[in-house]
Every structure is written in structure tokens, then in C-alpha cells.
Image 1 (spheres, rainbow, N blue to C red):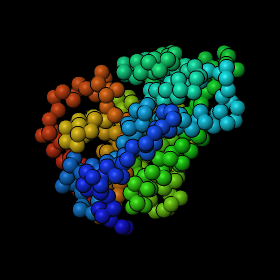
Image 2: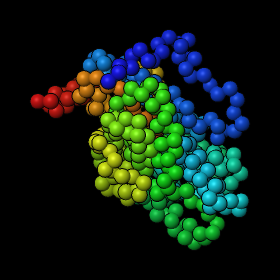
Image 3: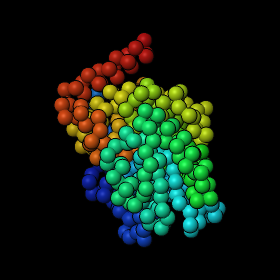
Image 4: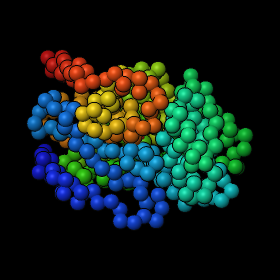
Length: 349
Ligand SMILES: Cc1ncc(COP(=O)(O)O)c(C=O)c1O
């Protein structure tokens, strides 16, 4: 495999040339995508072989703040093209948060009303953001998680089906298609085709499916790894424990080369480490993705592992994530990485 070290600019001047901002955009629709790729080298220092590198695709840089802007834009575009979404319709969906934010933002700019069904325990920030974009919100039972929101949304639509356009991110092929058309090519371009492994958290599965399909179409040897919570009662907003959930129709487990389970505690600790050591504040599912990327990377002799970081951390400052954040310090990283080392040693003996 070609090493990526010469392919990536090191100096700030070179980096700023690579990440020139769009000169002018006509609407927020044009600002979606082209997110940066950041090397994660400090947190992983000493843990990987020299020719193994980990990069994070920072999807929090999208205008709605998450990877979901891509899927939402594509689902609405396909809806408009097919005529399923037309003036007079209201956009409705069940969402764990980020898709709701994306739909609310896009509904505002396209001039469509948006109604969202979300679990009542979604973070306070998320609830306020969607309302700031003018969306109406109905809350489902927090104990039923995202599945409860899906079922309640179905009930609402069944009462007045003509009124609504329901993108249904769990079964809409435009969701993975968005990633096949945009995220995948970006990862390929940003690594100059050197990517060897993709690591993506599993919510609807749209990101893992779409990016994975694109990368494998360019190089069938690229491995696609899904990350999921290790427990049905997890605290990793945006991710699904597939074994105990309604499996999304767009998710095809057989397309993954591997699946890694991550504990809520480890993912949170990685979020704290990323903030204090890499200077990047991300959400829980990004911490989980990096744990997964490390598990993959520590076994490699050489490789370029790209982890999708779905969003940034500000939205979660009122959640349980913040509780451990306050008392965390760098010495705790040793425990987390030692755990990775021990598991690695066990795996190879
Ligand atoms: C924070 C967060 N992480 C990860 C995901 C998973 O992405 P996907 O639905 O493409 O599997 C989501 C999806 O909503 C999310 O909101």
C-alpha cells in the first residue's frame, strides 16, 4: 500500500490551500459536504506502527452540524424530483436528532413546514435547534428510544397520509446514495486513494453502506467496519444496538467486513481525550468511531484508517457526557490506551 505521509500537506500554508472555503454559496444547500479530514496522531501516539495512520472525517463542519445534512439533502432532492414532495406537503420524520436538525434547516430554506418526532430524552440543545429552524416537535417515550419515535411517527402519518412527505431515513435508498455520491468520493480524494479501512458508526447504517460501497467500487480490498454500542441501554446518541433494534431496511450487515462493539464509558473517555489532547470537541459517536478505528489500526503493519466523526460536541454539553468531562484529565488516557494495548496483546497471542 502506498504510504500517505508524502501525500498530506504538513505546513499550515499548504493545508490552507487544500481546504480553500467555497468562494460564494447561493444557499446553505451548497455548503453541505467537502468536510475536512483531520489526522488523529496525538491521542494514538505510541500505539500504532509508524506506517499506520488514522484520519477523522469531520462531519460536524456541515452547516447543520452533522453528517445527516448529506442524507437529508439527497432525500429531499429525490422527493422533489419524483413529485412526492410538492407545495402543500409537510415534511415529517422520526429522528434521534441530527436528521431532524438537517430536515428543519432544509425545510426552512426550501420553504416547507417540518414536523419531527423525537424521543423525549434527546439533548436540550437538539430540541432547541430544531425549533429555532421553525420545526414542530412531538416527543415519544424516552424509554422506547429511537424505535418509539419511529412507531409514533408512523401513527401520525397513518392518520393523514396525504398531508405528509416522510423521507424515512431508515428505508430511503437516497440516504446511502448521498454518501456514495459525496462522502465516499471525498474520502477517496482526500487520501489520494490510499485509504485502506473505513470505520463508521451504525445508526441507520446509511453512512457505512454508502461510503463503503463507493470505496469498494474504487478498491475492493478496502475494508469497511461498522461500530455499534455494546449494550441496548447505551448512551451513544445517534447509534443503534442492531441486535435489539428494528433493523433499518437500508442496512445490509453482509456488506460490512467487521463489526466492533464499543462501550459507552470508553467512547465518552475518548471524547474527553479528543478535546484535551487533539483540540477537537466531538459527540459521543465520534469517540466510539475512534475506539473502533484504534482497534482496527493497532493490528495493522501499514494502513490508512478513516473514521467518520458524525458531529461536534456542543450539542451534548447538557447531557450525561458532560458529567465525566469535568473531572477527566490526561492521566486517564493511559488507562484507556493500556486497555487497547492489552486487548491487542490478547488478540495476537
Ligand atoms: C451523532 C450520530 N452519529 C452517528 C450516526 C449514524 O449515522 P448513520 O445513520 O448514517 O448510520 C448518526 C445518525 O443519526 C448520528 O446522529
